[in-house]
Image 1 (cartoon, rainbow over the protein chains, first blue to last red):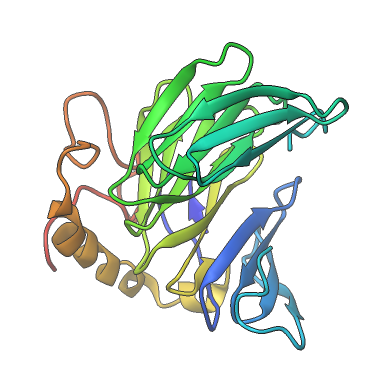
Image 2 (image 1 turned 120 degrees about the vertical axis):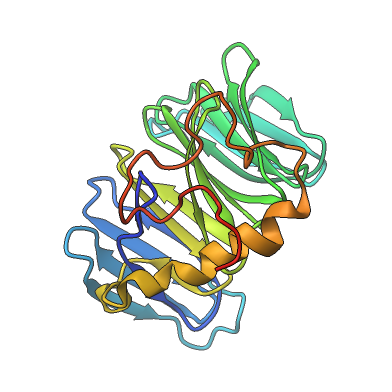
Length: 65
Length: 200
């Protein structure tokens, strides 16, 4: 996550490539999805991890959004 | 889709991007890239369409008039595009390992940031104050743990941008910080993406 100036604010690291990122409409949360089979929900304000969603039984490439 | 649910857009490997009216299913308009279209995004009102392509540009189109407003050049295929709801800013992610933010109207580059691999996802927050990126180097937005590593975060990517990637194609000109305005983030200090300074 970056400030629009380009300053890096924080980063999350997945175990494989990241396929999608999205802000919630109110801008308070971010979501990431990865080929590692997980999606993360993050607080944009304090940059903390709020939830991890793990897809079971999926193979790499199945998690697209 | 546009936020009002009125329009839906899709891009095709044949180089076209189409906008349909959801209610009627009628094709509203279509736009053409030189190569396959990889990503599309509508602004909230459905007045602007952003597209990314293998050609390797991102473009912003006026859905009503059909005109091309902006052409944003990358060094390799554009994998992701996003618009702020008001259509003011365009974010692009590319296989050239960068994500960039552009003025959607003028095409002026506002900011660029780097990954260690292709950037496959971008998002802008509602107010255009935050950019989130995801890459094939496994980085997404967010966690404080890595943030605490501080200045070390930026160095590998600065080296990559200033070294191997930068000279690869000079033609598009977006890394020649020319006289037509600032080409990187306006904030000094810890802001990472400054003018490329070469290896190290």
